[in-house]
Amino acid sequence: MEKTPSSCAMQWNIELEKGLRSKKPGKSIEAILDIGPRLEWWSRESNLHAAEYKIFGLIPGEDKLFANAILLRLADAFKSGDKHMKICIVKIFLSELKQRRQLRSQGRKDEGILSKDKVDSYRELLTRIKIVFDSGNVEERALALVLFGCWAYIAKDSADVRYLILSSLWSMHVLEAKASLFAAGCFSELADDFAYVFLEMLGGLLVSSETSRAIRLV
Image 1 (cartoon, rainbow, N blue to C red):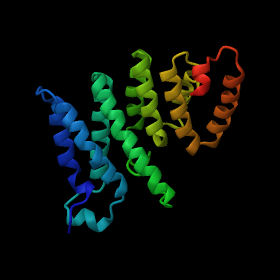
Image 2: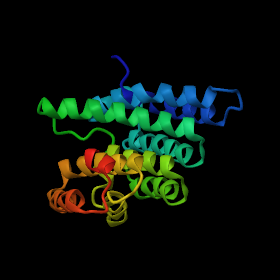
Image 3: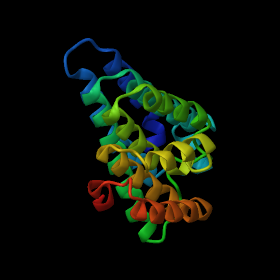
Image 4: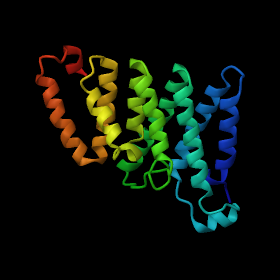
């Protein structure tokens, strides 16, 4: 029987850790780019049957443990890494989001590995990204907002994250406002109550004399 993402998860976690710890130039970025397609594969085939646990010698819940470990490593790298590393991490989750939307348009309801059912450490993940938002410059705040959008399944119920996104709609910086609009759109797909507030705020932004033309166009 061919291997599944869950049966490869331990090795992926090890390789990601080694890559992120490596002092060799470009190795950490390479590790991040390598894990991207693997996460997409895992999201496509995230449900493991009981027979597969036996075939691959897995302990029930082991796949979830390694999924959490991999996501936490990426969140830590986003928090402590440089601009290029942050951009690479956002890019792999944008690609994963694109795939998830395509699958959803085909009638699939499974949320992949980025769901609260599979990510026990979602609060820790969100806390790490919020640190970047709170302490970062405009570009870093924008990247954090985009990542919140990609992680809407685990972030949509967080009052803190909701506040960050909605308050950023009024940012004077186009980059940050554009990122907040993206994140708000992602949240609105999953939470009607958020969507109502978002649409009301959009109306206020459009008619406000303090909103620049550039922000209106965004």
